[in-house]
Image 1 (tube, rainbow, N blue to C red):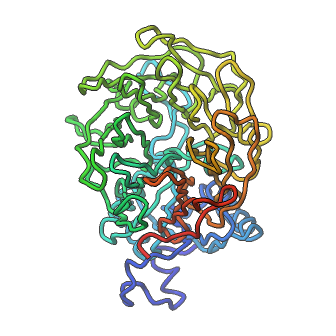
Image 2 (image 1 turned 90 degrees about the horizontal axis):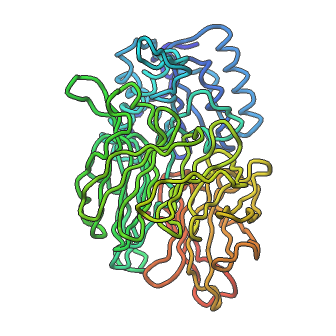
Image 3 (image 1 turned 90 degrees about the vertical axis):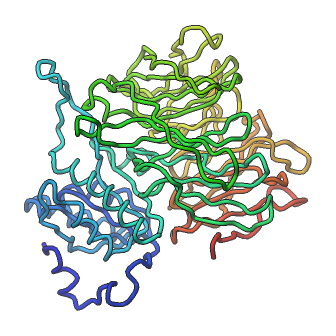
Length: 530
């Protein structure tokens, strides 16, 4: 087990600093940064075929941990994942990890960084001491927080987007990367503004990055551009209001007046396509009175109702769901706790027949529950009489009122769940993660919903069904491009469906619907910024 500096120098490799390639990314390269080698197997198990992985450890670990790492590397080789058998060991101490991780990233030049959970959930609560009890060793959280900070610094100095994933502590790696991610990437991340131009928004290590179409449907784009904003944790929720304004919602960690770190929900608005984004405002935290409880808050989901109110939902410290509402005049309501079953950190906010609704995957069961209101001013009601059984990491909103899409836990098939109705299967059991879609696409005179999802090894799969009639079935086809993030779809300013991915080289790629084609057909992929 080599120490810092020995692994590279001992092999006679020329460092990037001496070749002028310091900031040239290595496509397909992943840096996994963990506390010890024993933490790496869970992250390695989720890597796709074709990845090249370098593992960085803060400490060398025990003999048993190193043996487990060797077994994981052997398994990766059988799956087509290249992993160096000799991790880079930093010999880092608590409080001194960030600069060492930054040095490693400068040399490795990854496009993706994967690490541990910066804020692992408690296993119990010490009522006498009034604080959560954690099973995770302190070094794991410290390494994760240091890695997020180092990746941000690396992106700011390199100017190259870096995508960060944090592995949720205690999750089974066999569930797949989408199920184990602490801060999810959005499934809806490409939007059409009021002027008809498209914009794409994704979370990166240094904040939100944006690509912008220069003219509606014209093909020219600018970006990626790093938007001004706080040091966000690596996730993002993107929603649009009735005016077409784009609202970005995430989590940030900041130091409070007491000098301690606090986690809070934040929100910003994009009013005009391509223009500077509005200021980021805090939406608070349902457990704001106790920072140790607040750090466990789940990732926010959001939706607008018919009256223009923005509803934000999060999983709170007690594993319930909390919500607050912002009126069109900017005023926020207080946080409200939606009582009922224990919820996992996976929510999907949707627009129902009578206003905003939210679905949550159950924490202690294999079903999803739904909270709704008969009128916007009535109390929230929990609906447990659902037959929605989602695979972890797959809930997303569907265009039908109150409906969600998900993968069925028993078969991984894509399904649509609607209140008071049996689920409808859309097929597509291969791949993982959520499904995105857009309704109102003209396919030979029929109004259709176009769907995109991740297929085997991250390939983009596309399908369609008649609007409002998912029971008619979906024929899926391979779109011919892989993506590091969930693929997305939108209708452009000329009425064509546009699918978007981020390829393994970190560049945005899009394909537009071919007008007049027999059936659903797309143009060749266009690389943005090529």
